[in-house]
Length: 464
Image (cartoon, rainbow, N blue to C red):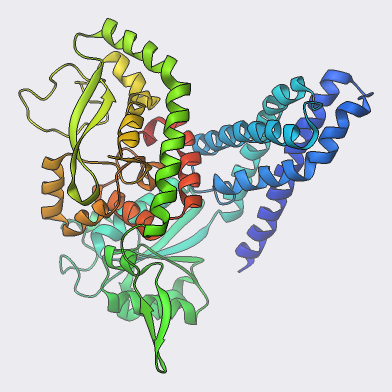
Protein backbone atom coordinates (compact mmCIF):
# COMPACT_ATOMS: atom_id res chain seq x y z
CA UNK A 1 0.00 0.00 0.00
CA UNK A 2 2.92 2.34 0.74
CA UNK A 3 4.29 1.80 -2.77
CA UNK A 4 0.89 2.44 -4.35
CA UNK A 5 0.35 5.63 -2.34
CA UNK A 6 3.78 6.95 -3.28
CA UNK A 7 3.17 6.07 -6.92
CA UNK A 8 -0.11 8.00 -6.97
CA UNK A 9 1.69 11.07 -5.62
CA UNK A 10 4.47 10.52 -8.15
CA UNK A 11 2.00 10.33 -11.06
CA UNK A 12 0.33 13.55 -9.91
CA UNK A 13 3.74 15.23 -9.88
CA UNK A 14 4.48 13.85 -13.37
CA UNK A 15 1.21 15.26 -14.73
CA UNK A 16 1.89 18.71 -13.26
CA UNK A 17 5.47 18.84 -14.54
CA UNK A 18 4.41 17.59 -18.00
CA UNK A 19 1.85 20.37 -18.36
CA UNK A 20 4.25 22.97 -16.98
CA UNK A 21 6.91 21.98 -19.51
CA UNK A 22 4.47 22.09 -22.42
CA UNK A 23 3.57 25.67 -21.50
CA UNK A 24 7.22 26.50 -20.80
CA UNK A 25 7.97 25.49 -24.37
CA UNK A 26 5.65 28.20 -25.66
CA UNK A 27 7.03 30.82 -23.26
CA UNK A 28 10.65 30.00 -24.17
CA UNK A 29 9.74 30.23 -27.86
CA UNK A 30 8.40 33.74 -27.21
CA UNK A 31 11.58 34.61 -25.30
CA UNK A 32 13.90 33.38 -28.06
CA UNK A 33 12.00 35.51 -30.60
CA UNK A 34 11.32 38.71 -28.63
CA UNK A 35 13.55 38.62 -25.54
CA UNK A 36 12.05 39.95 -22.32
CA UNK A 37 9.79 42.51 -24.04
CA UNK A 38 7.15 40.41 -25.77
CA UNK A 39 4.61 42.62 -27.60
CA UNK A 40 1.18 42.41 -26.06
CA UNK A 41 -0.49 41.68 -29.41
CA UNK A 42 1.71 38.57 -29.72
CA UNK A 43 1.51 37.21 -26.18
CA UNK A 44 -2.25 37.84 -25.90
CA UNK A 45 -3.21 34.90 -28.18
CA UNK A 46 -1.18 32.53 -25.99
CA UNK A 47 -2.70 33.87 -22.77
CA UNK A 48 -6.19 33.36 -24.16
CA UNK A 49 -5.51 29.84 -25.42
CA UNK A 50 -3.23 28.36 -22.74
CA UNK A 51 -6.07 26.60 -20.84
CA UNK A 52 -7.13 24.86 -24.06
CA UNK A 53 -3.54 24.10 -25.01
CA UNK A 54 -3.04 22.56 -21.56
CA UNK A 55 -6.17 20.42 -21.89
CA UNK A 56 -5.17 19.19 -25.35
CA UNK A 57 -1.70 18.27 -24.03
CA UNK A 58 -3.23 16.37 -21.10
CA UNK A 59 -5.54 14.48 -23.48
CA UNK A 60 -2.59 13.52 -25.71
CA UNK A 61 -0.47 12.31 -22.79
CA UNK A 62 -3.44 10.18 -21.72
CA UNK A 63 -4.16 8.83 -25.22
CA UNK A 64 -0.52 7.80 -25.62
CA UNK A 65 -0.64 6.05 -22.23
CA UNK A 66 2.27 8.01 -20.79
CA UNK A 67 0.90 7.79 -17.24
CA UNK A 68 1.83 4.19 -16.59
CA UNK A 69 4.83 3.68 -18.84
CA UNK A 70 7.31 2.04 -16.45
CA UNK A 71 6.71 -1.28 -18.24
CA UNK A 72 7.77 0.28 -21.54
CA UNK A 73 11.25 0.51 -22.98
CA UNK A 74 12.58 4.05 -23.20
CA UNK A 75 12.34 3.94 -27.02
CA UNK A 76 8.57 3.48 -26.70
CA UNK A 77 8.26 6.39 -24.27
CA UNK A 78 10.29 8.64 -26.56
CA UNK A 79 8.24 7.66 -29.63
CA UNK A 80 5.09 8.57 -27.70
CA UNK A 81 6.57 11.94 -26.77
CA UNK A 82 7.31 12.69 -30.43
CA UNK A 83 3.67 11.99 -31.27
CA UNK A 84 2.40 14.10 -28.37
CA UNK A 85 4.52 17.09 -29.42
CA UNK A 86 3.54 16.71 -33.10
CA UNK A 87 -0.21 16.59 -32.47
CA UNK A 88 0.07 19.30 -29.82
CA UNK A 89 1.60 21.54 -32.51
CA UNK A 90 -1.38 20.83 -34.78
CA UNK A 91 -3.76 21.58 -31.90
CA UNK A 92 -1.96 24.87 -31.19
CA UNK A 93 -2.30 25.95 -34.83
CA UNK A 94 -5.99 25.07 -34.87
CA UNK A 95 -6.72 26.77 -31.54
CA UNK A 96 -4.80 29.94 -32.38
CA UNK A 97 -6.72 30.25 -35.64
CA UNK A 98 -10.14 29.55 -34.15
CA UNK A 99 -9.74 31.81 -31.10
CA UNK A 100 -7.51 34.65 -32.20
CA UNK A 101 -6.97 34.47 -35.97
CA UNK A 102 -3.34 34.47 -37.11
CA UNK A 103 -1.94 36.77 -34.40
CA UNK A 104 -0.19 33.83 -32.67
CA UNK A 105 3.39 34.16 -34.06
CA UNK A 106 4.15 31.46 -36.63
CA UNK A 107 7.78 31.22 -35.50
CA UNK A 108 6.55 30.38 -32.00
CA UNK A 109 4.29 27.67 -33.41
CA UNK A 110 7.29 26.19 -35.25
CA UNK A 111 9.96 26.45 -32.54
CA UNK A 112 7.82 25.58 -29.50
CA UNK A 113 7.48 21.86 -30.46
CA UNK A 114 11.26 21.46 -30.68
CA UNK A 115 11.74 23.08 -27.27
CA UNK A 116 8.92 21.00 -25.78
CA UNK A 117 10.41 17.77 -27.13
CA UNK A 118 13.81 18.53 -25.58
CA UNK A 119 12.32 19.54 -22.22
CA UNK A 120 9.93 16.58 -22.08
CA UNK A 121 12.55 14.05 -23.22
CA UNK A 122 14.99 15.11 -20.49
CA UNK A 123 12.29 15.20 -17.82
CA UNK A 124 10.60 11.97 -18.88
CA UNK A 125 13.90 10.08 -19.03
CA UNK A 126 14.48 11.11 -15.41
CA UNK A 127 10.88 10.29 -14.43
CA UNK A 128 11.13 6.90 -16.18
CA UNK A 129 14.12 5.98 -14.01
CA UNK A 130 12.52 7.44 -10.87
CA UNK A 131 9.30 5.48 -11.35
CA UNK A 132 11.19 2.23 -11.85
CA UNK A 133 13.23 3.04 -8.75
CA UNK A 134 10.04 3.74 -6.80
CA UNK A 135 8.71 0.32 -7.77
CA UNK A 136 12.07 -1.40 -7.40
CA UNK A 137 11.63 -4.52 -5.36
CA UNK A 138 7.86 -4.66 -5.91
CA UNK A 139 6.98 -8.34 -5.51
CA UNK A 140 4.54 -10.19 -7.73
CA UNK A 141 3.11 -13.70 -7.80
CA UNK A 142 2.20 -15.38 -11.08
CA UNK A 143 -0.55 -18.02 -10.93
CA UNK A 144 -1.06 -20.39 -13.84
CA UNK A 145 -0.13 -23.69 -15.40
CA UNK A 146 3.67 -24.17 -15.63
CA UNK A 147 4.28 -23.28 -19.28
CA UNK A 148 2.29 -20.04 -19.33
CA UNK A 149 3.29 -19.04 -15.79
CA UNK A 150 7.01 -19.33 -16.60
CA UNK A 151 6.65 -17.50 -19.93
CA UNK A 152 4.63 -14.71 -18.34
CA UNK A 153 7.08 -14.35 -15.44
CA UNK A 154 9.90 -13.95 -17.98
CA UNK A 155 7.91 -11.28 -19.82
CA UNK A 156 7.05 -9.40 -16.62
CA UNK A 157 10.63 -9.06 -15.47
CA UNK A 158 11.98 -8.20 -18.91
CA UNK A 159 9.48 -5.47 -19.84
CA UNK A 160 9.56 -3.87 -16.39
CA UNK A 161 13.35 -3.63 -16.47
CA UNK A 162 13.74 -4.86 -12.91
CA UNK A 163 10.95 -2.71 -11.46
CA UNK A 164 8.96 -5.87 -10.77
CA UNK A 165 10.41 -8.99 -9.17
CA UNK A 166 8.60 -12.31 -9.45
CA UNK A 167 8.58 -13.65 -5.90
CA UNK A 168 7.23 -17.02 -6.94
CA UNK A 169 4.88 -19.09 -9.04
CA UNK A 170 1.67 -20.83 -8.01
CA UNK A 171 0.56 -23.68 -10.25
CA UNK A 172 -3.01 -24.69 -10.98
CA UNK A 173 -4.67 -27.94 -10.12
CA UNK A 174 -4.35 -30.73 -12.70
CA UNK A 175 -0.95 -29.45 -13.82
CA UNK A 176 0.17 -29.93 -17.43
CA UNK A 177 2.98 -32.34 -16.74
CA UNK A 178 2.04 -33.72 -13.41
CA UNK A 179 5.29 -32.96 -11.57
CA UNK A 180 5.62 -30.01 -9.30
CA UNK A 181 7.89 -27.33 -10.70
CA UNK A 182 8.45 -28.91 -14.09
CA UNK A 183 8.54 -26.90 -17.28
CA UNK A 184 8.86 -28.94 -20.45
CA UNK A 185 10.02 -31.81 -18.23
CA UNK A 186 13.02 -29.95 -16.76
CA UNK A 187 12.65 -28.48 -13.28
CA UNK A 188 15.92 -26.54 -13.62
CA UNK A 189 14.36 -24.25 -16.25
CA UNK A 190 12.21 -22.53 -13.62
CA UNK A 191 14.19 -19.67 -12.06
CA UNK A 192 11.60 -18.72 -9.44
CA UNK A 193 10.38 -20.50 -6.31
CA UNK A 194 7.30 -22.66 -6.78
CA UNK A 195 5.20 -21.52 -3.83
CA UNK A 196 2.55 -24.21 -4.04
CA UNK A 197 -0.76 -25.11 -5.62
CA UNK A 198 -3.90 -23.01 -5.98
CA UNK A 199 -5.32 -24.88 -2.99
CA UNK A 200 -2.52 -23.29 -0.92
CA UNK A 201 -2.87 -19.81 -2.43
CA UNK A 202 -3.98 -18.00 0.74
CA UNK A 203 -0.91 -19.33 2.53
CA UNK A 204 1.27 -18.17 -0.38
CA UNK A 205 -0.16 -14.66 -0.08
CA UNK A 206 0.60 -14.57 3.64
CA UNK A 207 4.12 -15.92 3.15
CA UNK A 208 5.16 -13.57 0.33
CA UNK A 209 2.87 -10.54 0.86
CA UNK A 210 3.09 -9.53 -2.83
CA UNK A 211 2.27 -6.09 -4.20
CA UNK A 212 0.56 -7.54 -7.29
CA UNK A 213 -0.80 -10.89 -8.47
CA UNK A 214 -1.06 -11.95 -12.11
CA UNK A 215 -3.43 -14.74 -13.13
CA UNK A 216 -2.68 -16.56 -16.40
CA UNK A 217 -5.41 -17.43 -18.87
CA UNK A 218 -4.83 -21.20 -18.84
CA UNK A 219 -6.13 -21.72 -15.30
CA UNK A 220 -9.55 -23.29 -14.91
CA UNK A 221 -12.44 -21.00 -14.02
CA UNK A 222 -12.55 -22.61 -10.58
CA UNK A 223 -8.87 -21.89 -9.94
CA UNK A 224 -9.20 -18.31 -11.21
CA UNK A 225 -12.08 -17.73 -8.83
CA UNK A 226 -10.03 -19.02 -5.86
CA UNK A 227 -7.18 -16.64 -6.69
CA UNK A 228 -9.41 -13.61 -7.26
CA UNK A 229 -11.42 -14.20 -4.08
CA UNK A 230 -8.25 -14.61 -2.04
CA UNK A 231 -6.78 -11.39 -3.45
CA UNK A 232 -9.96 -9.45 -2.71
CA UNK A 233 -10.01 -10.85 0.81
CA UNK A 234 -6.36 -9.82 1.36
CA UNK A 235 -6.79 -6.47 -0.46
CA UNK A 236 -4.20 -7.33 -3.13
CA UNK A 237 -4.21 -5.90 -6.64
CA UNK A 238 -4.89 -8.71 -9.11
CA UNK A 239 -4.43 -8.72 -12.91
CA UNK A 240 -6.23 -11.32 -15.03
CA UNK A 241 -4.89 -12.40 -18.43
CA UNK A 242 -8.16 -13.02 -20.33
CA UNK A 243 -8.90 -16.13 -22.29
CA UNK A 244 -11.30 -16.03 -25.24
CA UNK A 245 -14.30 -16.84 -23.03
CA UNK A 246 -13.46 -13.92 -20.71
CA UNK A 247 -13.33 -11.61 -23.73
CA UNK A 248 -16.79 -12.76 -24.83
CA UNK A 249 -18.12 -11.69 -21.41
CA UNK A 250 -16.52 -8.24 -21.53
CA UNK A 251 -18.79 -5.21 -22.07
CA UNK A 252 -21.76 -7.20 -20.69
CA UNK A 253 -24.77 -5.20 -19.49
CA UNK A 254 -26.70 -5.83 -16.29
CA UNK A 255 -30.37 -6.75 -16.54
CA UNK A 256 -32.75 -8.70 -14.33
CA UNK A 257 -35.45 -11.30 -14.56
CA UNK A 258 -37.87 -10.54 -11.73
CA UNK A 259 -35.43 -10.39 -8.78
CA UNK A 260 -32.63 -12.39 -10.49
CA UNK A 261 -29.68 -10.37 -11.89
CA UNK A 262 -28.56 -11.43 -15.35
CA UNK A 263 -25.83 -10.27 -17.71
CA UNK A 264 -26.61 -9.55 -21.36
CA UNK A 265 -23.64 -10.73 -23.38
CA UNK A 266 -23.24 -8.29 -26.26
CA UNK A 267 -23.01 -9.35 -29.90
CA UNK A 268 -19.55 -9.77 -31.32
CA UNK A 269 -20.15 -7.12 -33.98
CA UNK A 270 -20.16 -3.35 -34.41
CA UNK A 271 -23.66 -1.93 -33.70
CA UNK A 272 -25.58 -1.21 -36.90
CA UNK A 273 -26.16 2.43 -35.95
CA UNK A 274 -22.39 2.91 -35.77
CA UNK A 275 -21.62 1.33 -39.14
CA UNK A 276 -22.90 4.32 -41.15
CA UNK A 277 -20.76 6.75 -39.15
CA UNK A 278 -17.74 4.48 -39.52
CA UNK A 279 -18.24 4.24 -43.30
CA UNK A 280 -18.53 8.01 -43.73
CA UNK A 281 -15.35 8.55 -41.71
CA UNK A 282 -13.57 5.85 -43.76
CA UNK A 283 -14.43 7.61 -47.02
CA UNK A 284 -13.51 11.11 -45.82
CA UNK A 285 -10.22 10.07 -44.22
CA UNK A 286 -9.25 7.91 -47.21
CA UNK A 287 -9.81 10.72 -49.70
CA UNK A 288 -7.82 13.18 -47.59
CA UNK A 289 -5.00 10.68 -47.00
CA UNK A 290 -4.78 9.74 -50.70
CA UNK A 291 -4.62 13.41 -51.72
CA UNK A 292 -1.79 14.06 -49.25
CA UNK A 293 0.10 10.84 -49.97
CA UNK A 294 -0.17 10.81 -53.79
CA UNK A 295 3.32 12.36 -54.35
CA UNK A 296 4.81 9.81 -51.96
CA UNK A 297 3.10 6.94 -53.80
CA UNK A 298 4.49 8.16 -57.15
CA UNK A 299 8.00 8.49 -55.70
CA UNK A 300 7.77 5.03 -54.10
CA UNK A 301 6.61 3.54 -57.40
CA UNK A 302 9.62 4.96 -59.24
CA UNK A 303 12.06 3.65 -56.60
CA UNK A 304 10.44 0.18 -56.63
CA UNK A 305 10.85 -0.01 -60.41
CA UNK A 306 14.50 1.03 -60.20
CA UNK A 307 15.25 -1.42 -57.36
CA UNK A 308 13.90 -4.70 -58.78
CA UNK A 309 11.94 -6.01 -61.79
CA UNK A 310 8.22 -6.53 -61.43
CA UNK A 311 4.99 -4.54 -60.98
CA UNK A 312 4.74 -1.58 -58.60
CA UNK A 313 1.40 -2.66 -57.13
CA UNK A 314 0.89 -6.10 -55.65
CA UNK A 315 -2.50 -7.81 -55.40
CA UNK A 316 -3.22 -10.61 -52.97
CA UNK A 317 -6.46 -12.42 -52.10
CA UNK A 318 -7.58 -11.78 -48.52
CA UNK A 319 -10.73 -12.34 -46.48
CA UNK A 320 -12.83 -9.61 -44.90
CA UNK A 321 -16.30 -9.32 -43.31
CA UNK A 322 -18.02 -12.74 -43.05
CA UNK A 323 -15.16 -14.37 -44.93
CA UNK A 324 -15.81 -12.45 -48.16
CA UNK A 325 -12.74 -12.64 -50.46
CA UNK A 326 -11.23 -9.52 -52.04
CA UNK A 327 -7.95 -8.43 -53.59
CA UNK A 328 -5.81 -6.30 -51.29
CA UNK A 329 -3.55 -3.67 -52.85
CA UNK A 330 -0.02 -2.99 -51.60
CA UNK A 331 3.16 -1.51 -52.96
CA UNK A 332 5.40 -4.46 -53.85
CA UNK A 333 8.05 -5.05 -51.18
CA UNK A 334 9.19 -8.56 -52.15
CA UNK A 335 10.87 -9.96 -55.23
CA UNK A 336 8.43 -10.65 -58.04
CA UNK A 337 6.59 -14.00 -57.73
CA UNK A 338 8.14 -14.59 -54.29
CA UNK A 339 5.93 -17.63 -53.57
CA UNK A 340 6.16 -19.35 -56.93
CA UNK A 341 8.11 -22.30 -55.54
CA UNK A 342 7.15 -22.30 -51.87
CA UNK A 343 3.41 -21.65 -51.91
CA UNK A 344 1.79 -19.49 -49.18
CA UNK A 345 4.35 -18.60 -46.49
CA UNK A 346 3.95 -16.13 -43.64
CA UNK A 347 6.43 -13.24 -43.77
CA UNK A 348 9.14 -13.40 -41.10
CA UNK A 349 10.98 -10.56 -39.40
CA UNK A 350 14.11 -10.85 -41.58
CA UNK A 351 12.47 -12.38 -44.65
CA UNK A 352 15.07 -12.80 -47.46
CA UNK A 353 12.34 -12.30 -50.07
CA UNK A 354 11.96 -8.64 -49.07
CA UNK A 355 13.84 -6.20 -51.31
CA UNK A 356 16.12 -3.41 -50.08
CA UNK A 357 13.50 -0.77 -50.86
CA UNK A 358 10.80 -3.07 -49.52
CA UNK A 359 12.38 -3.14 -46.06
CA UNK A 360 12.16 0.65 -45.84
CA UNK A 361 8.62 0.75 -47.22
CA UNK A 362 7.51 -1.85 -44.66
CA UNK A 363 9.25 -0.14 -41.74
CA UNK A 364 7.59 3.18 -42.61
CA UNK A 365 4.27 1.49 -43.50
CA UNK A 366 4.34 3.22 -46.90
CA UNK A 367 3.52 -0.08 -48.62
CA UNK A 368 0.11 -0.03 -46.91
CA UNK A 369 -1.05 3.28 -48.47
CA UNK A 370 -2.73 1.71 -51.57
CA UNK A 371 -5.09 -0.09 -49.20
CA UNK A 372 -6.92 3.23 -48.96
CA UNK A 373 -8.33 2.23 -52.37
CA UNK A 374 -9.70 -0.94 -50.74
CA UNK A 375 -11.31 1.26 -48.10
CA UNK A 376 -12.98 3.45 -50.76
CA UNK A 377 -14.23 0.30 -52.53
CA UNK A 378 -15.79 -0.91 -49.27
CA UNK A 379 -13.66 -4.04 -48.89
CA UNK A 380 -11.89 -2.68 -45.81
CA UNK A 381 -12.17 -0.09 -43.07
CA UNK A 382 -9.32 2.12 -41.88
CA UNK A 383 -9.48 0.51 -38.42
CA UNK A 384 -10.23 -3.17 -37.93
CA UNK A 385 -8.57 -6.60 -37.75
CA UNK A 386 -5.89 -7.09 -40.39
CA UNK A 387 -7.19 -9.21 -43.32
CA UNK A 388 -5.55 -12.60 -43.71
CA UNK A 389 -5.12 -14.94 -46.64
CA UNK A 390 -7.64 -17.80 -47.10
CA UNK A 391 -4.99 -20.52 -46.68
CA UNK A 392 -3.85 -19.20 -43.30
CA UNK A 393 -7.40 -18.47 -42.13
CA UNK A 394 -8.33 -22.11 -42.71
CA UNK A 395 -5.25 -23.30 -40.80
CA UNK A 396 -5.85 -20.92 -37.88
CA UNK A 397 -9.55 -21.79 -37.62
CA UNK A 398 -8.60 -25.48 -37.33
CA UNK A 399 -6.30 -24.65 -34.39
CA UNK A 400 -8.55 -22.00 -32.80
CA UNK A 401 -12.21 -22.07 -33.95
CA UNK A 402 -12.80 -18.63 -32.36
CA UNK A 403 -10.50 -17.15 -35.01
CA UNK A 404 -13.52 -17.00 -37.33
CA UNK A 405 -15.12 -14.40 -35.00
CA UNK A 406 -12.58 -11.74 -36.02
CA UNK A 407 -14.32 -11.66 -39.42
CA UNK A 408 -17.53 -10.44 -37.76
CA UNK A 409 -16.26 -6.96 -38.61
CA UNK A 410 -14.71 -5.51 -41.75
CA UNK A 411 -10.94 -5.84 -42.00
CA UNK A 412 -8.78 -2.77 -41.48
CA UNK A 413 -5.49 -1.14 -42.42
CA UNK A 414 -4.57 -0.80 -38.76
CA UNK A 415 -6.09 -2.21 -35.59
CA UNK A 416 -5.78 -2.79 -31.89
CA UNK A 417 -3.55 -5.84 -32.43
CA UNK A 418 -1.14 -3.72 -34.50
CA UNK A 419 -0.71 -0.96 -31.90
CA UNK A 420 -0.68 -3.21 -28.81
CA UNK A 421 1.29 -6.16 -30.16
CA UNK A 422 4.69 -6.66 -31.71
CA UNK A 423 5.88 -8.35 -34.87
CA UNK A 424 6.46 -11.54 -32.86
CA UNK A 425 3.15 -11.45 -30.93
CA UNK A 426 1.44 -14.85 -31.10
CA UNK A 427 -1.66 -15.29 -33.32
CA UNK A 428 -3.66 -16.12 -30.18
CA UNK A 429 -2.84 -12.80 -28.50
CA UNK A 430 -3.46 -10.88 -31.73
CA UNK A 431 -6.84 -12.62 -31.91
CA UNK A 432 -7.60 -11.50 -28.35
CA UNK A 433 -6.89 -7.88 -29.28
CA UNK A 434 -9.04 -8.14 -32.42
CA UNK A 435 -11.98 -9.54 -30.44
CA UNK A 436 -11.54 -6.91 -27.70
CA UNK A 437 -11.69 -4.21 -30.38
CA UNK A 438 -14.96 -5.62 -31.71
CA UNK A 439 -16.47 -5.89 -28.22
CA UNK A 440 -15.51 -2.34 -27.23
CA UNK A 441 -15.89 -0.47 -30.53
CA UNK A 442 -16.54 3.27 -30.50
CA UNK A 443 -15.52 6.17 -32.78
CA UNK A 444 -13.29 7.40 -29.95
CA UNK A 445 -11.56 4.01 -29.88
CA UNK A 446 -10.88 4.30 -33.63
CA UNK A 447 -9.39 7.77 -33.11
CA UNK A 448 -7.15 6.49 -30.31
CA UNK A 449 -5.95 3.59 -32.50
CA UNK A 450 -5.16 5.97 -35.37
CA UNK A 451 -3.13 8.21 -33.05
CA UNK A 452 -1.28 5.20 -31.63
CA UNK A 453 -0.54 3.96 -35.16
CA UNK A 454 1.64 7.02 -35.73
CA UNK A 455 3.80 5.89 -32.80
CA UNK A 456 3.92 2.31 -34.11
CA UNK A 457 5.42 3.58 -37.38
CA UNK A 458 8.33 4.97 -35.35
CA UNK A 459 8.92 1.61 -33.64
CA UNK A 460 10.73 -0.94 -35.82
CA UNK A 461 9.74 -3.99 -33.74
CA UNK A 462 6.07 -2.95 -33.73
CA UNK A 463 5.66 -3.09 -37.51
CA UNK A 464 3.55 -6.12 -38.46
